[in-house]
Length: 310
Ligand SMILES: [Zn+2]
Image 1 (tube, rainbow, N blue to C red):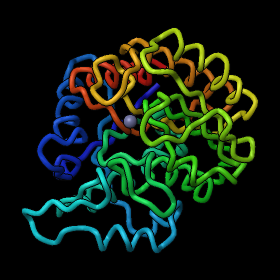
Image 2 (image 1 turned 90 degrees about the vertical axis):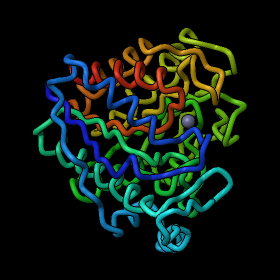
Image 3 (image 1 turned 135 degrees about the vertical axis):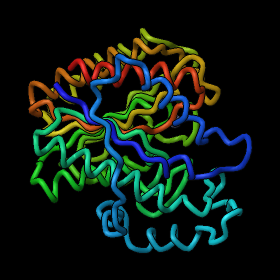
């Protein structure tokens, strides 16, 4: 089993104000962890930059233009795009490259050159709704990747599994009337952005598994066993995309779920089992949140190691 890793230095140039949690140091911490010899078999590649048309796979043109208009044009400026979403002069290029990495990862996995791939990109994507940048996200990388798998590669059923500690309101918004995409999310509730109740089911294709604050491994794994995994088995996806946020780690400052790296190893293994049975092992994983540098490095490291082991 071979795992591809997409990375790019442009992801470090998406600048945010001092003290903002979604900062370039997140990727520096992850990159440092991935220098360990155990990650040497990773097949690393520079993420290509997607063109503007890729955005239109999941967003209307009005949203693309609104984001482009919101970008600063001077080197030293950081503009507030939305309440907690900021942009610097290189942010648009970083966002297009995050999308480009996701699309290339889908292409690799569909071509069979790699069983799975991880895209170590920022800005993240799962809060971006069809018409709205929010929660540090401009464009919904996972949604765009799912549409690309369907439209370019003829994949019928795509499952997106989102274990970021925040609900992926954007991904739900984009797919809630589309039964060809299953969206499963574990997340803390109550917490930003406020969506993600069990009762939000879309057209039977949305499976929310909210977790109460201060729970840990047992509740997370139970949510997988009782809700996420049965839904995936019933859906029998042809392709699995993971919205891989690591802010449910116990060290994370933005939430109160108490997972450790081994929980992400476990959950990854469960999804690989499903992918092996239904999806010819095809899994693409995209970095979302994770704001404690040590927690992120540990969790993402264990997740990627599990992808490599298969
Ligand atoms: Zn998050």
